Length: 164
Image (cartoon, rainbow, N blue to C red; front, side, top):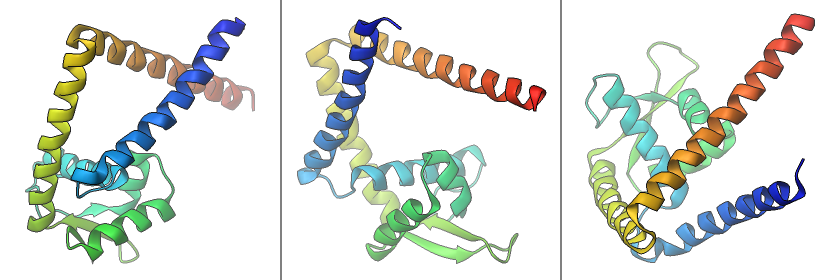
């Protein structure tokens, strides 16, 4: 592998961590933490894609864990924090007696809308500083990079399965 590519990719990963840290510290004017915002966004997207109301639609914890690509323990921790603030509530699944679903409350939805507007203003500001064309190029290349990596992993898994 080209050493320069390896070094730049490593630097990008560090930059990603720095971005997450910056977003967390940006919380001063935000109510929801970075992870909480993402979990609530996943819950609302799930409801919307299911054609159900955004508020009070139960989302299985397993789906949230898979969607956010994190452990069930981390999802539980995030949900507990949101629940303590009254932004979500848990309910037993009627489909699976062992399962738990999480619902966004009306209060949670209102807070999420506020946070979503702030997030859009922040993205607009970043877009103004770096140029929207550059921002779109960056995102397009990042998406292409991720697709390529996923394809390679899938090919490797398929090859191992076929040979196994």
